[in-house]
Picture (cartoon, rainbow, N blue to C red):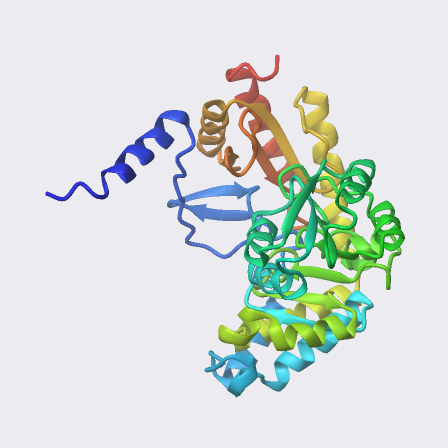
Length: 394
């Protein structure tokens, strides 16, 4: 028998022994405050469905009506026969919502980063990247073949030091940061990064996947939060989190967006975003533009939960947003904690290496506008019970 794949068995066993093996659970219900997971009804604290739009009636109706009119799949890439008037309408609406000159859509936020970074910089260039940037940024940087110079997390002084060390060694420079860091729930001092970008004549790019629908006026994101319109060159985002759908986008200066239409490889070589996704995302923009109610409720729920978790004695790290990491350190402890929460009717997954650094395993709690006060109380009770049982709190 061939032994060429034995190494996979060994690696999988190693993951299990170290507590890093992912058991992928299965959902059999719509997204919401409550889910049916592996056949059990549990309170949902895992999803990125911040505003509850993933099964919102208006989004579902918009998707159904669009399918009745256009069908399901686009049938081609955007540059051949895949651009529908719905795509153009969405891009126009996103540009208006984000208060930028133009926008382009991709198949996902991950694809948006993979398409954008290599289109802007190459072998003769340098990328100044926050050390905790998302995997899609890291992969986009690698694909670009540009020099990658990492700076300390959310540290403008470190960024400036790294820039000075590289002056004269590159053709073009690009600063990239997450808008909201998804593992810790914090965000960078983007106003200071913008100052640095302008002082050194560098492009500034922010991946606001977890900031859209959360930060800024009516969920317009971190650029709006800091009132930096026109000073951030590229905003990358996703429709799979607060917007409740699927797809990605890049918003910013018109000439950059036009360049991505010509050289963004996922835009050129992968089929367009599907009809129901586009129509549902337009409906999500409608909801966000009409009222701040869902965003306000999200923050109210987050403030209550984080305050009470602190009162119980849990370490919630350095979060500045509704993302609430419950810091546990040890990966096996985090797995056991997640398992016991599930048994108590609360679905909150453990995250360990390589998603977070070794020794920083955690339960990441994702608060939603759909959680009721009773839901929050149930979750707090489960965390208190399991935390005492496992010796995390006294």
